[in-house]
Amino acid sequence: MSDKNWPLWEVFIRTRNGLAHRHVGSVHAVDATMALHAARDTYTRRGEGLSVWVVPSNAITASDPADKDMMFEPTATKIYRHPTFYEIPDEVGHM
Amino acid sequence: MTNTPLFQYTLRLADTALILGHRLSEWVGHSPVIEEDLAFGNMGLDLIGEARALYTYAGQIEGKGRDEDALAYLRDAGDYRNLLLVEQPNGDFANTMVRQFLYAAFAYPHFEALKGSKDEMLAAIAAKAAKEMAYHVRHAAEWTIRLGDGTDESHNRAQNALEELWPYTGEMFEVDPIERALIDIGIAVDPTPLRAVWDKTIDDVLAEATLSRPRDGYMQSGGRSGRHSEYLGFILADLQFLQRAYPGATW
Image 1 (cartoon, each protein chain N blue to C red):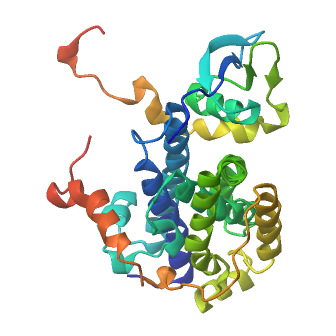
Image 2 (cartoon, chains in turn yellow, green; image 1 turned 120 degrees about the vertical axis):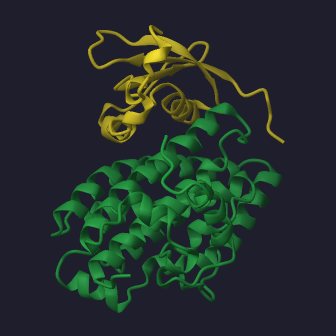
């Protein structure tokens, strides 16, 4: 079965209009490469960013900027991931 | 059903994307870790998104008023044209990941080539799909390497998956008269030259994964002409239930 002791990685994302990478959360992964995939799959599903860093205790690993089309553009057409895609009945009022 | 080559070709691409997307969606909520749960969901939605665009286009080509939903939800197994590879059961994590690797290693160069199609719509769909498949092949390859070069158990499971799925890889490179006609006029992709690209991707990753490439033996075939394994019927029963039970239901 899966080993629950995979290392923890902190995830930093630079948004489209942001000036710096911002900490967004953490993932578990066996190594740097898989941590980057996990961070992409976990934290950029709604087009949140164009670059991801994953950071173990004392090192930083960054995504290749040349990968940004592949990494992030596929989310652009998935409009159903935005709450505005869904119609809220009038009776609900302000949410 | 219309049998124009362009309709058939587009439908084959759409069905393969939908069925594999559905297979990946079956992992959601069952993955060993939440990160992979999301990864399967993401890859599944990439594929279903490709299927939607392709079905919509297929419906336009056919010109009989069928939309993406009609093509996805209201055809039976015999009318489906997907590769047999993608309808195979998920099995264990290694099985699903190896299947994803075998397919994406083909789909990525395939869609890269389709970007040059003389059919503008297919070229546009391919441009988006190629980016998605680039990630799928990378993610699945990295996992294949870690499973193969991991523990004895993960190695054995990955090797078993390879042996089990290998007979379904030949179908990706088949060319029948329907596709030949479209290849000759620059619309469809000739898969023959993609073989060397696929071989190199597979061989490089398997070497790093310390996995053995299975020998090419008898290859299964028939999915793209509607002859499927028994698994497709069960997939469609799951996938189509709502539209069959509540025709026209929307959400």
